[in-house]
Length: 316
Image (cartoon, rainbow, N blue to C red; front, top):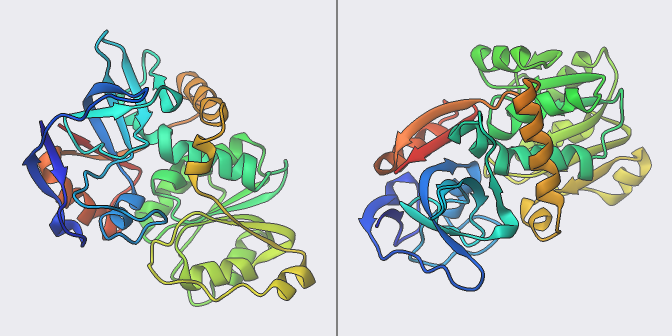
């Protein structure tokens, strides 16, 4: 089969289309024909070997696919063992979901990793309460476009989006954000509070790291929660001071979807809920671009350059 395989760690230039043997569906996994594969920011870390889990070469990246089973059923799945950037992949039933009629491949891919991440950050980690304010950084991205909408659906009183361009900020507003802020502003802490009518904020979804993390933590209200789920800038934040957290009754939480995948029902709860919302027209997954499998490098370059919105997909 054809696949994107890397034999050395690096940037997008290491993504090479090659012929490799078909994967083997052993130990409870099943083999599916890949119709589309999702591209995530975590994939850019994976090919650098800068992600949370150490990687081994040779490597076929890709954490999510839409595929077709031998019986013709169309499914979306997390590829727990990687290998999504290929014509065939092995998936496990615990992380595999039949796609309802009326939902496209790109929409399903937008939900299975980015959507479940947004869902459980808001529901499980931040425990968003009705009326609370929510800051969604990178609000035009894969997680962000869904987090803006889910926060509203879960009862947030005010959703504050940040995005790097006027077009991206307008997209966040179109998706339901109450206000959109440029994260490059000189005083982001003040800008976030001003966007919340001058008050500190309750919940922050943060995946940039560095100064954005620091400014967001400073903007938190007492009993506020910052959930960190990425470090797109590759710049670590200032180390968190436990005494300052205690003195201001603030919390910093980490989120990695792998842990939700190990608990029966957590992924299914989110997927069932979001499928229902999409079919009802109350949740709109944003598909921002489709690339042939051979153009995986260009997809990664677009993602890293911050020129993309929503979900990017590869089609074998």
